[in-house]
Length: 449
Image (cartoon, rainbow, N blue to C red; front, side):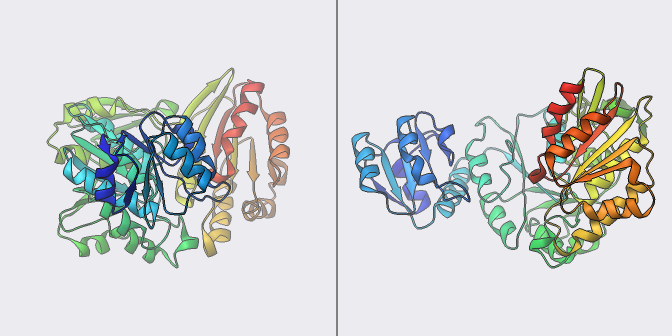
């Protein structure tokens, strides 16, 4: 991105005070400020970004966007360093307005948006991999998939990108409206409708209605044939495509993923669990819509590598870990349990699960369901961590499995108990919601390995 503070003020409906400085990047984080950055201070749950304006200026920021009055000392610092101060009523709305209009003026790509209760990131990465065999493809960096992060992700787009594949994360009503106003998708993928973020919605029906707003009049949407909300999504538009499994043959290879046959092409796909096949099916559907043949799609998908925290295989010493710690819902935990149970393994199997968060009134029921699934699984030991996982523990306790289950709300107790159980050759599943930070146990694994 390259623009001037004056142009930013014009597109964002803000007021420029000071010189018309060059802006080449935008950030909310003072630690990421470099030369010619527009710094946008926000009031967070733990810190106030306005306390870091001085740091941003010292690091080379050329402009500051403010929706609150600046102190006299900060104003003096900005004048001394010829900083462009942009005043607005709401910083987030100003950034969203600017990014949508800036991209509209500089649009050079075909847009794809991916939403759903789980599987968004993996599906996005597989679509990117498939398209990358023939196109220059940009995608959501990190977790910039919300109304706060999406505008920044758009402004960091490679000017050479021919396709842009972005995640749309929605956790409350009305958020999808804002996302599509910033990034109207030409193609959309709805991975599934589960009970993630149910505490912010009254029902799965409300979740489906919110996710369905991604389907604009000009949008061609892809929905799994197995989705029970497919009829609803089809009622919204004639441009909704039911996605079936396109692979002639699917041969599981354990931790090495799958050998797939697409038309006459045979290739290897990284990723464990049957949900990987569903995600890859979306990638095939989008890539075929883009005009790619099976050979190109197979070439692209074979280059896919799971991201950290999303089913990545970590081998350390004599231990192997399935690191799936980025997030957790009933669907994704069920998939992970099914995946590890299907893997043939000579050593022991340990399962470590943290709370599934934001499930609202369905939380207890969902955790009990996890307990039922675990009760049918053959493994050496199960570790359950967090307040909500007590419901799963009670199910296992009632079924006489207390000797093979450790439950705690204390991470230090979890870590020490887990360490004592680890043996050479073990396969470990780490899974939990982001707030549980289950990846912390990787240090325990490395020490034991």
